[in-house]
Length: 131
Image 1 (spheres, rainbow, N blue to C red):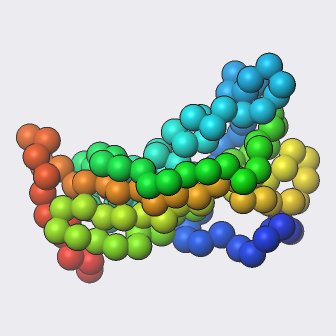
Image 2 (cartoon, rainbow, N blue to C red; image 1 turned 45 degrees about the vertical axis):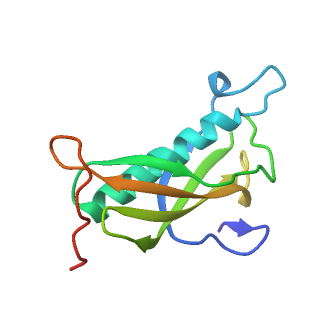
């Protein structure tokens, strides 16, 4: 049973991956850029499902790191489609660390990602209605 340190994640679990030594600096702290890249991958998955096609990242709104990740932690990315416009959507994204060999989950960071749906020629296209 997982124990959440503060509240519970918003959204659906979209991606889980293990932080490895190649993702860390000499002190064993995981690079923030690696965490952000995993968040971007998760947004791409969720947004492509919602857009029923190709998407790209247009913007990432403010991000700060509340906790460090260490080698061996499992990074869990949760996503929630917050808003859908004509060609874009805003996703709320949270990154949580399940600590190595533990049931403790702590929120590492969060951000809003803006994703744009593209057609086959790489031009913005309308996001289809849900249904």
